[in-house]
Length: 223
Image (cartoon, rainbow, N blue to C red):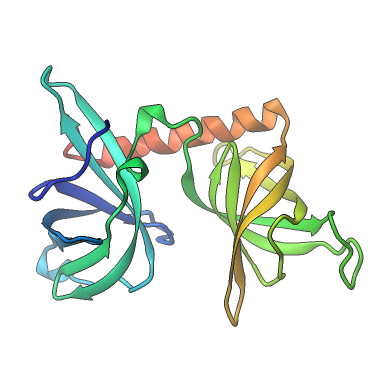
């Protein structure tokens, strides 16, 4: 069985939609049946409110009997926020994941993309639709778009992935829609890649590795 957060643990919190991908220090101060209560450790000039219903990624580490440290993460939703204390959803044990054991690392991003639905004909045939990739791994992606999609739709997704500040590569993948959320303004949906070249998969994996290398350097509580 893997590690699980306990009261008193230091936890780093990152809002998935934060364009600057800031990390905030917090302490787990209470565990309820279906929620964690965390206290944000902030200077007075840094005080802010965590938006209710926003998704966060939380990180913590555990030292074993051999004094080896391992970094773990879980995803949660903000339930409430009041004067520096936030209540977030409590993850199931299997939802707490050790970085090193994840097959394909998922990382937040903000990548412009286009796609077309290839499993059914809409009013415009093979119309190209705009989307934003907000989460990416070598096995799938989370997207936001004004175009309505449905579960099990097959889509072709096109985007440019920047290897660095000067170079980018064009990537084309096919995926199946596995989750959909609708709103009045836009829809968000997740796809599982069903057809991706090994070269494109490697590019995304390298990007994920680079993201988490930089992230770990910022996690000051990691020795």
